[in-house]
Length: 266
Length: 248
Ligand SMILES: Nc1ncnc2c1ncn2[C@@H]1O[C@H](COP(=O)(O)OP(=O)(O)O)[C@@H](O)[C@H]1O
Ligand SMILES: [Mg+2]
Image (tube, rainbow over all chains, first blue to last red):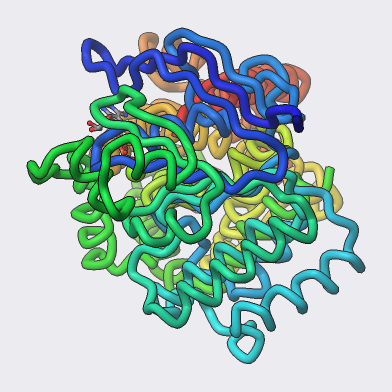
């Protein structure tokens, strides 16, 4: 038995009266690939924000790599890399500058950083475009760069919040294969969310399904299929969470971005 | 340390890459300088107070720094909207160094802006009395830049709202500017203004810059320095407090 590197006990997050995450408990073992699935608004991103010190839980206990995100923030933050659901690059900087900036924030020694950056940029096929400004990048290129960025400091845990959203199948496959390789070779733990069930089915050792803030089931994809008597994870997912369509409430950020663009500021 | 440096560097790179904005932001101080300097100058001279440009120039230098510094907070708002704020806040670098680096970067940009305006005042006819004191004046210009960049940055992380932020900034900037003695001598101002100006942090840096460049002092350099340092410490503490607690 390997020890859990992510441990979540009875975590609750309330936004005023609304409970976004409701008494969630789970743990992820070192070296696991763990898929955290759920419809829009289920509470996936909110959970990740709590795991990554960006949000304080209302109650409950979290341990990341043996550290408490509330009291040992610095240690927790050095333990993981993250690709956020929304883009988080500096558009006014080049790809190379974005990665160097990241390396500096994570105190990666200069020479080592340059080696890794070179390697990672080649890997995500952006080396030729390294000196271009991010504002000239397509969505897929940005995503690839963000994945590369999340790996520059060689984290023990990699959080991926819908990393493949908007990527073409070629890029998705390359990306997952590389992450799987890192997971195998380096023992990097991967915690990811996705709406593509076959990605979870193919790459996750274990899967948890969350809806309305509550954890519904947890197990290997096979166990979940068996439990729900379905043939695929997608069917299992639909059986558990229903067929109703969910809206993601926080679309306002897109409106803001459009406004920002029309102001010509960036 | 490294984080402070890269945060600082980033602000400068971004400043350099948006040079068109620099030109635009020079327009307002130049307008004030020309309109007030040449418009009110003759009356000022008639009243026996001397050369108004000579009096006004340090005030306008202060004004350009104040405006640029406070609006450095807008960068925080943009960074939040574009997600980049998260990238910095999730890193193991301390929030203290992130805040300080940003603030030093914004303050450096504001200082550069102030120096450009200073050069322009020279072209318009401003003549510093004592060039040797210029470096000391630069110290106070930097303090001014630092205090208000820190304030703008701290408020921006707190306010979040992109539309509300410029309104709040103007709500603060206008009284701070007009009640500071940037435009008129506090010594001859009427009682209430004199009293209010005592509580306006900007009064002290303007006073210092003016007395170093033209020899006309109101509070005296010792008090100017003390108040400025205290304000700088206060807004830094406030900024770190907000940065440590922000959730993104
Ligand atoms: N800052 C917030 N204030 C209020 N409600 C929020 C906030 N952030 C998220 N929520 C709500 O919490 C729920 C879960 O959101 P989220 O974790 O983003 O879902 P998911 O990532 O699974 O799509 C949603 O209903 C969302 O509207
Ligand atoms: Mg989400």
